[in-house]
Image 1 (cartoon, rainbow, N blue to C red):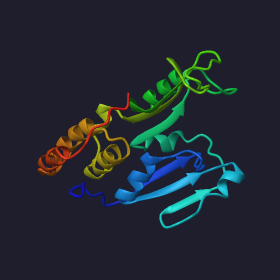
Image 2 (image 1 turned 90 degrees about the vertical axis):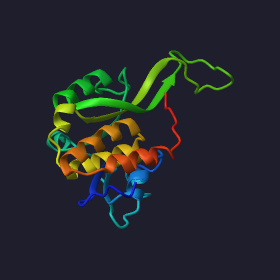
Image 3 (image 1 turned 120 degrees about the horizontal axis):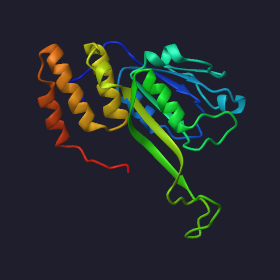
Image 4 (image 1 turned 60 degrees about the vertical axis):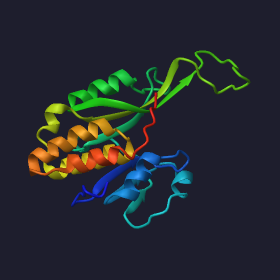
Amino acid sequence: MDFIKNSEPIMICDIGAAPSDKTDFIDDLFTNTNSKLVGFEPNPDEFRKLKNVNNKKFYNFAIGDGEEKIKKSLVLQLETSPTPLYKDEKSSAQILKKLEELGFALHMFNKVKTQCFRPMVLNNNPDIGLNYLFQLDCVLVRNFREIKNLSSEQLKKLILIMFYSFKSYDFVDFLIVRLDELENSKFINDYRDLLKLLKFNKIY
């Protein structure tokens, strides 16, 4: 989508940056846009696997209370569990309620992980899940009241994040219409032509 460009880099913050988990949603954004990444990984063994390269910087420590930083974010993805797995962990409902208070709205699940409610082997696979929700990768965006107040540059960043990271093409359409209103542009025509070339994969 080369007809929309951000002037300032998109700042990607990866908390828990261990390379053991695939992060296509970060890689696609970083590869296709003007972006910089800052990663934090407290585990020394995992941290040693990370390499600082151009526009990527990693730190070997954990993050504490980042509420003020979160308030300035355009998009959040976080792994939550409806039933907490660890001591003192908050449930999905508690976390989402707090983020709603900070001006965010749940937009989608990037990943839904299920497990059997009790240990069972189904189809000869001990890891297969049925209906019990084990972990949810939640994607939150600024709520619609906040989106109305975003600048053109912020809208461009949000458009690129939702397009490359999360393939949320319908939401991107909405955002581009808003951008056109601000800039008196016609990006929506180019975008809808592009949509005709894309293949859509429903996640859930």
